[in-house]
Image 1 (cartoon, rainbow, N blue to C red):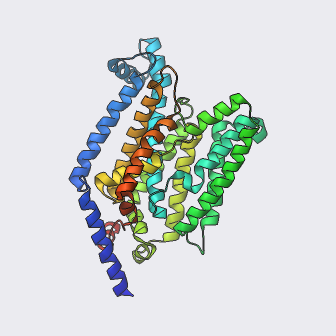
Image 2 (cartoon, one colour; image 1 turned 135 degrees about the vertical axis):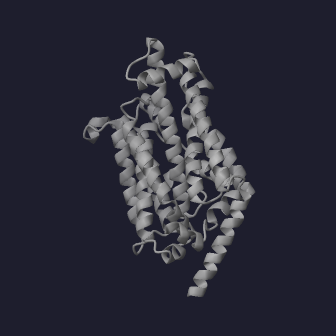
Image 3 (tube, rainbow, N blue to C red; image 1 turned 180 degrees about the vertical axis):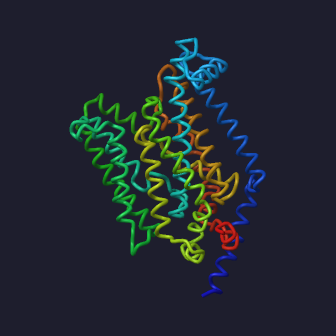
Length: 380
């Protein structure tokens, strides 16, 4: 038995090293340099996001408004202050948090199910949130006990995830294939209810449903930000702390168990954290596709498959990706605004097809991410 485990560990270590050698920023110093560049780019892009719109605002004015509010009061220019602080700042923050949170959620789900096609919709969160939101849009909040749309979507996401989780368990464990099948089946079942509600909706309600289903951060305000921001920040911090254990889970249940990791408990906690993050984001931003599917693969190509490096890069890349998509959504047909999901799908689908045809996604996700010696040292 020990000989078998040692062989598996040696193979896992070799595969991990071979994969990371292909990544241009796999070393720790290069990863840090990449993160600095990405964070600086994110800050510049965030300022640009608050400056661009139907009413042009200069970057110095944006900086002045933000600094004035951070000091405790509005800036001297009332109109610019309202545009930047009340409209564009919440939108930029939500796009940043949603992009980073959805990207990390996708990375974790791909690791749990060991499948390159894993994303937040696979565990039922997105279909469940859609059902809750569409029920409020079509039947009104009174039909659901007076729940607002965002709360109905959040509850729908968690309830659907709970059903998928219960059906995906087997003998105390969560086999990846069983979880995928449960998620797909429940997702289609919940989606059929959503489609039925759309058939009895008015034309105006159908338009609202379509816009919500494709996602948008245009409705962001300071009142809706605290819950998703807190959940995403805390969830991301917990995932970063447990990145080494996540590596072990992807390496295989036997490898993880040999390192003293309670695999069923870790899988359950990972799924709950990801479901809470995704549910809180989908509830306020709608069903934004392809962020959690594509961005983790880009991060693996840059820094390798080790989650200690990959997760932080994934978060920043996701934030940048969604900010760019939001800028495109409100400028392509200005002054009209496109749903942000149209942009993410138009950009993400061709890129993901290229990844699939090149075989990079399959190698990255299926290869065990780290070997036992490195894991033992990191777990001490």
